[in-house]
Image (cartoon, rainbow, N blue to C red):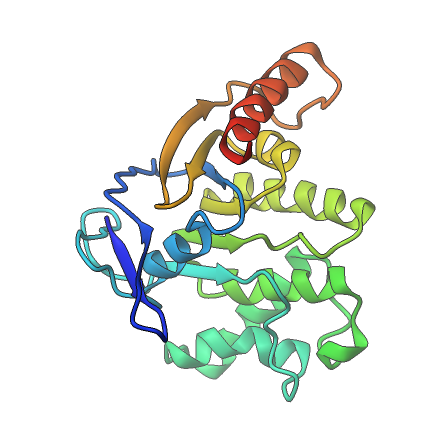
Length: 240
């Protein structure tokens, strides 16, 4: 898979070059790399928000995108819609009958612990609650694959850890396939069943790490720390 952009001055920039990646069903795959390595571009290609320059993308053997949900880096809730109305949006677009859409939206708000704030506006929520609502909106259409672009990057450490744990529970309970972009090395090792390290100029896969540790992971255990240090060393070589 290759993606080339053209700058305003006409210069061509290769964001991703000859990237070959297979994601297993039910996997929690973390894409790790420095800023500018094409992580977000890859997610946008998967979601159909960008078109590849060459190569192709398939999901379970098809080229469809309807089975994918997307949680963006920054709060992407519609400010003119209530929390419930935001979660309903994806269901409305897909033509889900109103009664069923209401049921699903409330079900997923309950899953992310937002029952009781359905009529609130996004600006009335904390950052963590806004991201919970974004996750509920992405999950309500029940996609097979969840794409997440540094969803916890702007949150404080305590809220980030709480949402990481909640996301893992949703992943297990709903049998999701998750592609999770981050530049936080500890987050990648704590969440992923596999960590793919991307290099830059152009974006490419440098190394893949399998993470054979059960969830929830003890971040102070010797196996975790050993793998964390190994990933840190590889990451440091990229940016040195």
